[in-house]
Length: 94
Image 1 (cartoon, helix red, strand yellow):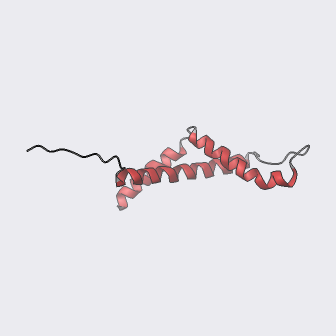
Image 2 (cartoon, rainbow, N blue to C red):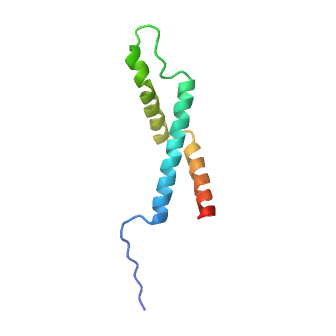
């Protein structure tokens, strides 16, 4: 008897689950990095020749975007640790 496997090109539910866990872990790392950047003073308005009230209102968006780019570039490894932990926990409960 000959068996053939059909590859549909669609991700399996396990792949989709891992992708969503990885995305959640990356979001958590970006949020963490954004808070650390804020604590370090990134995004604070300058005393001289600053952007005024507009700069203060939109600086959080800049800090968040910078944190997300840091994660895309490899981050600090927190996303991978979070992903592994979430994956392990989902296998225990599921």
